[in-house]
Image 1 (cartoon, one colour):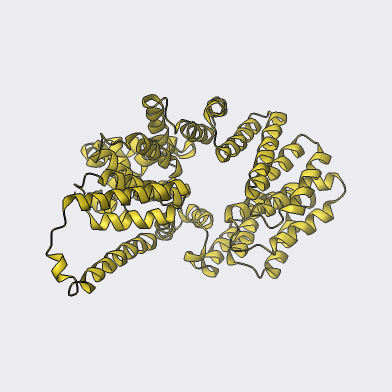
Image 2 (cartoon, one colour; image 1 turned 90 degrees about the vertical axis):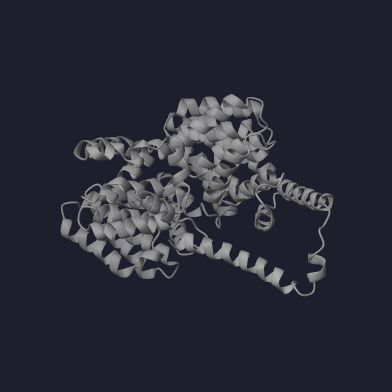
Length: 511
């Protein structure tokens, strides 16, 4: 809810500012306001605006483009001849700055209102690609397939192939992913896309256990990243090179990549992961103490810019290594010591507590009472608003069978943050809770949630259970088979999901 309210406040502020400007100039310009400007002057002004939009787009100044198109949208009517161009540039600007829900709604509006626009081809690409950015994988694949079929000569084809390959990687169809990568390599001339493609190729080859080829792909990605001086891509490539060479037992090569990383990219957001990835390799080379020291140094210097998931992954790798080598009690004591020394951001404390909890659940699962105490302590120690989404989902999953009210609160907190990456898990959790109710509105909301999982997200882990839950609901409550939540088409469902949650709730509860 906080995210939606913030969005409305921003829009309201812009509208009020616009109104104030009109009011301020009302007296001084009253005479001029009575004059009707010739239509050709208005058309010239509009054309100049479109040229400004094109220029900002070509410069990659998408934040400024967002601001300019918003001003235009507030000042002109949707019947204007060039309103399709304004809507298109507004949608694209939101896409590039990461406002994917806003982009989704604008692109939906564009595709409905302007089927004959000159911008239709590009809008259809961005519409399909945006579904992938929202992690609506199933819907995204269908839209991308449709785009590739209808626009085989599009300038967006390489990007469409990349999104399609990414979706196949998500669905673990690694051979299909590699086939699309071959098509990208034939159609692409963008160096940035080239690097992303080589990284994706490395990931897919690694999953197929083609480790030498995977290493080659990551090495090419690193070299290409150096050519365009993309430090983040170099660091990501080196991290993967540390991992994949170590998996082949080539400790010296792995250590070479490791030391290059630590010399040049120790401040990178991937540093904690590189430090964790190098521990086993360094142990093989009798340098375990050095690796442990580097890991701790990076852990206690983590900044607010670091990625919470990266930290959780690194701590999992570190904890697994120490637990296997020295035992459960040792790693629990070690993590406890880290907690005592932690003076960094709160998410570091959270990650350390969750790492302890993971160890207990995996290696001391018979002690349910101690585990329950850990969960309760987390809810007491941390404010929900300060917890990461990963922590919220872990807590919600635990309390789903023990405290439905608390679990619902946690899932709603996740949904209110608007994180597309984790939305499917929260929607599934809420749908499971709502399916236990006898209230018709709750049951309809549950149906809608399970349909989203199956038809939009396509999450492999959750899809089978969602289908089973849907069938069970319709068997137990036959009257729901005629409800709008069941009868609405997939396209209507996709359009509805893009709306703010309060709109969806009103739509569900209207019957």
